Image 1 (cartoon, rainbow, N blue to C red):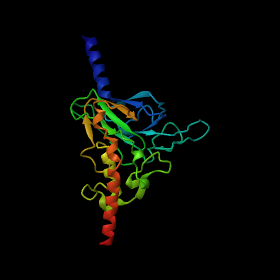
Image 2 (cartoon, helix red, strand yellow; image 1 turned 60 degrees about the vertical axis):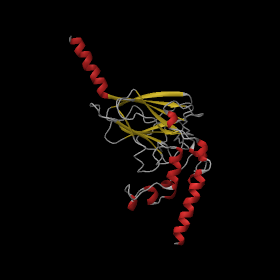
Image 3 (cartoon, rainbow, N blue to C red; image 1 turned 90 degrees about the horizontal axis):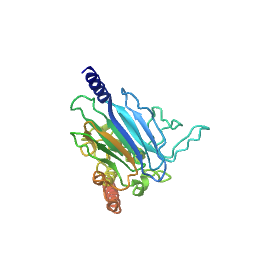
Image 4 (cartoon, rainbow, N blue to C red; image 1 turned 90 degrees about the vertical axis):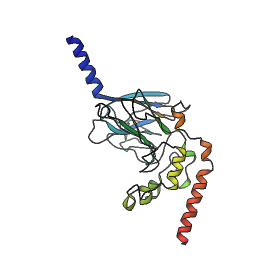
Length: 277
């Protein structure tokens, strides 16, 4: 009886301490270096960045209450003879480990806030393009209960459809309108810092058309934040064949061939009309 009580106590301790397992999968045709930034007031994970060769995976355990974000760095060069760097989403540490630094935009971000572990406490998660886009990414929940527990992310290669004014010089990433132009109406800052005063721009609409479940601008909460309880999560870079869950994340890429141009032309016409008036 005493042994049973000890086993049960240890089981409760384990389940109350470890909130979720994050598994990173690289299906890209190149190496990805995931970066990790832990939120203020929560304990860091065992690493802040690592190398993930193509067709490989790695899992990390996170405690209850953990919050933070993940992203994929590309085109990195770390040779041990001096500070290294990445061509997209670099964290500026000069090392494989990011050491508490975040991603330089443009970067596709996966953001999490895990529940406290108490009964009914939920995890919140999203994939954000608010800081721009550098590679396809999806998040899938498994083993969870309550909440939507839905897949989210961006399967479409937005770099192929990025407007010229948002492209980075090498074409490996697509800036957000905020990063490209720095205007309050795009950044939801200053007089535009509320949901009522900051509406989605034509560029945010383009991102949303391509990736309906991802955050396209700062106040895109209603269709972009997801919940689950007691789940583990898989973050996949460059997902290939959609599963039953990921199929709903993807929008048919061919729908992007003409509509974004029409959206941009309509936006330019509205700007010209407003200047004339």
